Image: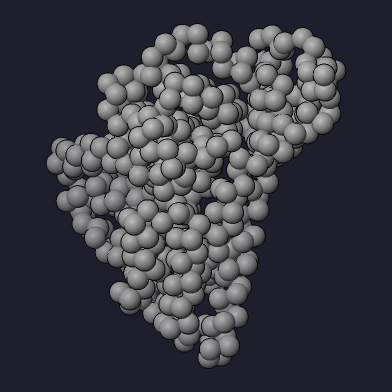
Amino acid sequence: MPGKRKPEPTLVISLIPVVILIAALFFTIAILDGSGHIPLILGSVVAACISGFVLGMPWKVIERGMTQGIATALPAILILVVVGLLIGIWIASGVVPIMIYYGLKILAPGYFLVATCLICALISLATGSSWSTAATVGLAMMGVGQALGINAGMTAGAIISGSYFGDKMSPLSDTTNLAPAVAGTQLFTHIRHMVYTTLPALVIALILFTILGFVIPATGSVETPEYLLMLDTLEAAFNLTPWLLLAPAAVLLLVWQKTPALPALVVGVIVGAILLLLFQGGAAGNGPGGSIGRMISALYSGYESNTGVATVDQLLTRGGLISMLDTIALIIVALAFGGIMEASGMLECLAENILKMAKSTGSLITATIISCFGMNVLASDQYLAIIVPGRMYRNAYFKRGLHPKNLSRALEDSATLTSPLIPWNTCGAYMSGVLGVSCFTYLPFAFLNLLSPFISIFYGFTGITIQKIEDDPESVVEA
């Protein structure tokens, strides 16, 4: 029969493409400082060769596995395209700058760590990027913390906790879009379900930062030259009016009304474009024509900040359709690899061997979290830490009648949040380099990142917030 495999994949055979992929990823990312695209293509080639020559699969079946694997992410890819447009237009219109401005204004020495965490959370929510937040506002906070005599590890921990809260909960984040696509649920369903683990983790983190603020009181003033320069630059570059907050308010209203992600984000783009034409015409120059040109440029290639202040320019130069193409390409090749592994039965073989020890819902979620952490350690990439375990355990969750949003939440609670805690992971290396503090120095104070995986495991064993498919069948996306 066409498509029938000759031998079934063994554990050893199934591990070969995974081991080769991890070795290639480690060499490319950790040693060559490259990206994961080429190692993933190599892994896909190895998996295809094993499927064809060892397992006797026809090429059409292998090809179908790749295309079906990629097809699962098409809704997320469409959302990522709109997210690129949204980021560019929200920066150009002043929506993101005014959120940054208001966030910086709430700083005070007595609650510096708490304020730092909240500011980074707000800005990361607005931009969808923990990396941009840490490299700009986070870097400024490190300088303020040093001026106040705050331990550098504490300040970095507050920055990372806040940045990853926003990164994880923002519909503009690529990982937040990727996790539900891999697991099989909708974006806003995924975000609402993450509130149950992420919000308690944030509250506990803020309490701990408050305690640290009392134990180790700050001295001096937050009004450093760098801090004041950022505020003055934002005021000079944009017309900062509270009316700009209509854009995020419109999106939040649609989310509250359970509008699907794609139309809700498109509305955000439209409102942002209108706000740009209304309020930033003077900054754009050349009247309405200049504003329209600036709008089109921001939508396609992103916003380019030219204030002359490095921290502001680095934070605001981003977005646009082009900015998402690299992430989309990575998702496509990663899911092509996962599709071959799934069609050949190798992924199922790996999952079955791990799931022999997972008899309960709690142990299944624990296995998911440990697997994601392991992929972060071995593959040094948070995208792979979401995609590979997500594809491995997706069927196990369905077979147990568990809603896929439980899986997508576990993926983010572990893969996304533990990535900056590993020195050789791309996120860990980036955060350490940008903030000037080693991973092991800020790790004890990255409270949100440490707490979320354990809260997720606790829910798994107690059944708190764990939902069945029949509880919300409309938000299940079939493979």
